[in-house]
Amino acid sequence: MTSITEISEFESRISSMIKTNTENMINIVLSFGDNLHPEALKCLERIETGEKMLDAVKKLPK
Image (cartoon, rainbow, N blue to C red; front, side, top):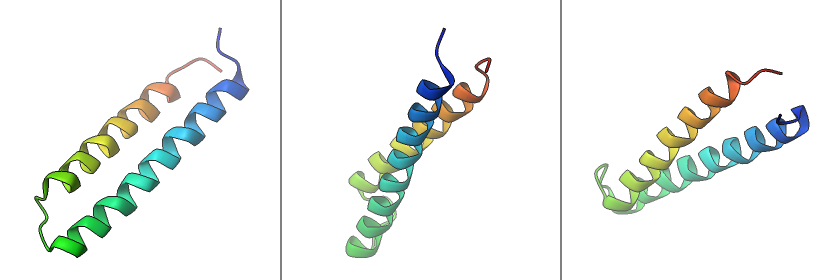
């Protein structure tokens, strides 16, 4: 079984990844003036994946 500490560390890493990708997406959109820039869309995909991962972690028994 996964420990509470491991779950907390995982949540922290995923939250950090979401924050970093959000910042990167904002910078790309502002730099290129293109909301649909391919790199911005990759960041968005990573953010969505991270959010799904956090939702899944919340369902783990603690």
